[in-house]
Amino acid sequence: YQCMLLQKVMLSPGGETFELWRKPPVNLYLRIWLFNVTNKEAFMAGKEKLRVQETGPYVYKELMEHYNVTFNDNGTLTTIPRHPLVWEPEMSAGKEDDVLVLPNIALLSIADVVKDTSFFTRMGINLLAGQTKSEGLVTITARDFMFGYKNPLVTLGNKFMPTWIKFDKLGLIDRMYDFDGDFSTVYTGETDVRKSGLIDTYRGSPLLPHWKGEHCSNVRGASDATKFPSLLQPNDTVYFYRKSVCRAMPTVRFSLFTNEMKTIMGLQSYRFTFPNNSLDNGEVIPENKCFCRNGKCLPAGLIDVQDCYYGFPIGVSYPHFYQGDPMLVDAVEGSHPDKQKHESHFYIEPKSGLPLDVTVRFQINMVLGDVSGITRAAKFSDMVLPMLWTEFRMSKLPEDLNNRFILYLNVLPVVEKVLMYLLFSTGIMFLLGSISRIL
Image (tube, rainbow, N blue to C red):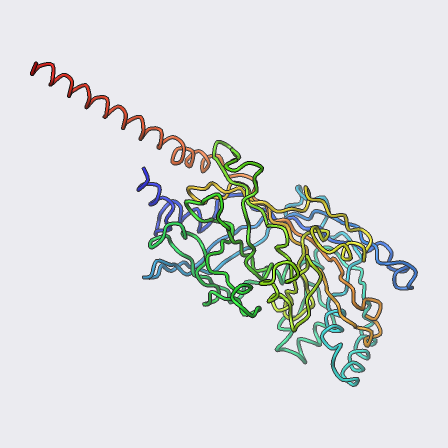
């Protein structure tokens, strides 16, 4: 049985686990909540602090696939990730054409990028912002904000700063799901079955270029949530990597009791979560100091990921700044952190490393410095603006797949033991019969 299980969890050409990993036959959903600004006039007049209201969810089905797979000679394979999204109107609380008031990403990003440049550069941006009538808050549809809209500042940036702005429209989800040029090398499990399905290198390196120091940049051994380590032990640390998070996030098993497991549709699982202080910038965990950029550390619960978002001043947190510095919650009215709603979890079958229930939640924020030199952005100086938060969810396996793994993981071990005892008992009976005939 053990040999059969090890063969099952390896990624081999045409193998069952490989096909499950290559194109997971599960329902993956991306839920998106946008932070609609409800007091634009009062905020811009300086009478009130910014107030936002969560709107959504806007739900998309993610058709995840590992494309163009090539098996290598060293126990790895190389693949290109694909994550196309399909709109699910019946599952959504909002409509794609909902009209909302949201931050003007183009103006505020450019204002932040040029904040330390010469007076003449800032004067030029002020003239452009005036000519294009750009404002810090824009009225826009949900779809345009998520997947891109023509913005005159982006168009000019694409023309005059092509090394920075390489696209002609700007949308947050569109940028999060830009996998152009990406490829990863993944362990097959041939040399170490525990590593089956885990990342060896991403874009040709085990280290992300965005961070200094291996502690912050390493992605080797991380999972993209399609397959976790096989033969998982209760005290293991499991790493999760998603490009939009810009790092490999550690997860640890959560349990009130030492060996507590949860049964999901007949399969046993461990529950893993992101540990406390996992978004710390070195204040609690000294090794996390490498997540600070240019010597500047963001408040606890907020990670600077601008290098993963084309230099835009973007910071990642948990939804509603859950587990973050209280100053983040207080700065903008409308944040209500809630453990039940905003915590992530991973239920993993430990023998196979199969994900049984995965929920990953993160928030995308704009983290601005002193942008007072750009007149139309000045009101937003030194602010952290929540823009949207996402939930990546796989709640259960398809029934036929679940039943197959119940057979592999629950039934066959029992059958093996029964056969072993039957053979042992039969052997004893033959031995006793032989002895009785001799006597």
